[in-house]
Amino acid sequence: MIKFFENNDQSQKKGERLFSILIPSWNNLPYLRFCIESILKNSKYKHQIIVHVNDGSDGSKKWVEEQGFDYSWSENNVGVCYAFNSAAAMAKSQYLLLLDDDNYLLPDWDHYIWEEIKTLEHPYFAISATKIEYKSTFNQCVIAPIDYGHTLETFREEDLLKEYQSFEKNDWYGSSWYPMAIHKQVWDQIGGLSVEFTPGMYSDPDFMMKLWHAGVRYFKGIGKSRSYHFMSRSVRRIKKNNGRKQYLVKWRMSNSVFRTYYLKMGQPFAGSVTEPEIPWLLKLKDRIKLLFTV
Figure (cartoon, rainbow, N blue to C red):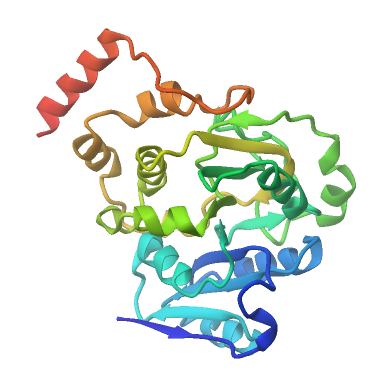
């Protein structure tokens, strides 16, 4: 069972915060604290911070409560899908920002995302900040390898703040990864994250596909909006679901095809995407995969 705890501070009423920032956290207090400190220190605007505390036996539930943030809580780890959905239920802003607790947001991250949103005349978008990571995973959407520390103990914050703007990165196609801003109207329309992907593997690409079916075609990563990513501090501890199989069966398409042909993941941004033409060999390959999976 998930419980909700709302701060009665009137300064957080609807309309007085730009983003409602949703942060799931599972016994990861040092990184959660550091993540939220970066929001408070490096944001241009004021935001509603909402944490979902999974378990919280490390003191994170008590700390969040002491800070006066809105939060939801589950006695056990319910995974990121339930966590994000629970936090979103408490959102007061019309704009949501999904954020993992192992990110350190860099100065004016919100300014660049908001400036992009203001150019749009519709709520059908998914806009991400660009992550800086200490090792390369061949992900074209991030800036890597740029090593300012693998842990909080080795993190060179002062050096990063002096130098993070020196790394070139243009706007890119794809969004998909957090930090990600979407309109709450669209979140409600698609029902948030799909809990059948609990504890969360492949819940991100499934979320993107749901956005696609809802009519979203504006998937953009902002090169100037940046965070430093300590890279999956919690994922290493969970028993993973077979998200690849679940995704294939649900959408009858592999995630790699969707990312490459629909989202154009990592390519230079040039406007809204359109319905792609998929090579017939790839369609056949996915059908064979599906046949053997089922």
